[in-house]
Structure formats: C-alpha cells, structure tokens
Amino acid sequence: MDLSALHSSSPQVGDVVAINHISLSGGGSVRDAAHVLNLTTSDVLALGVKNSFISNGHVQMRIDGDAADKVVLDDLLGGSTYAWTASKQTINGSAYHVYSNADLGLDLLVQQAVTVTLV
Image 1 (cartoon, rainbow, N blue to C red):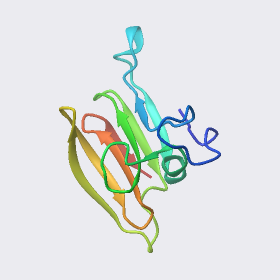
Image 2: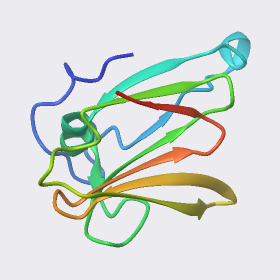
Image 3: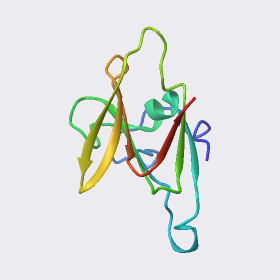
Image 4: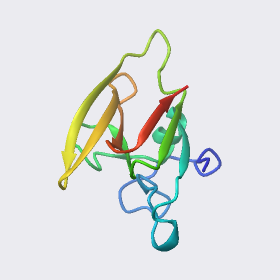
C-alpha cells in the first residue's frame, strides 16, 4: 500500500480525509495475511492529525498490525538537520514504538509486533 497519492492538505480531527490510524491486520480471511505499508515522512505530515494519540502538539499517525505485517519507512531517518528519537508508548493496552521528530513536530506510532524497515 502506497499512501503518497492520498494527501493534498493537512487534515484535522474529524475530517473525512484524515488517515491517522491504519490497521494492517484486516479482518476475515485477510486477518492472518502479511501486509506491507510503504510510508514516508510526507505521508505522515499530510495525513496525520495533531495530538490524536499523544498530547504533545505533534502531527501523529498510528499503525496497528501483527508479526506478519511490515512497515517500510522511507525518508523517515531525516537528514543531518533532523534528529529522530525512538521511544515506547502504551495506548489502550497495546505497546507501540514511537518514532518522533521534534523539528518537524511529527510522531509515528507502530505497534510493536509489526516489523519496521528503515530505508
């Protein structure tokens, strides 16, 4: 799944175009299938929603899934002017890896069971 074609402006909480929470696990017969999500910094900034999971003033996106799922984070390491930090957060009983960039005001939360590849 490639999200780059979906964003044209910054959504707000309640907007129909906001895609701040993606579940890769699916339902029914696709529940146990392996899913791959390709994601960039631009995707998170354009489709995420400010303060949607953590109240820190950052634009945020959350990815849920299981051990069969994979998120490919392209362009998320930033350049020499951006400092990325990784932390952990529990939301509604589920554990997440949180990738944050204070310079961009950005948080990406990925459920801990999901494989994350940085390219």
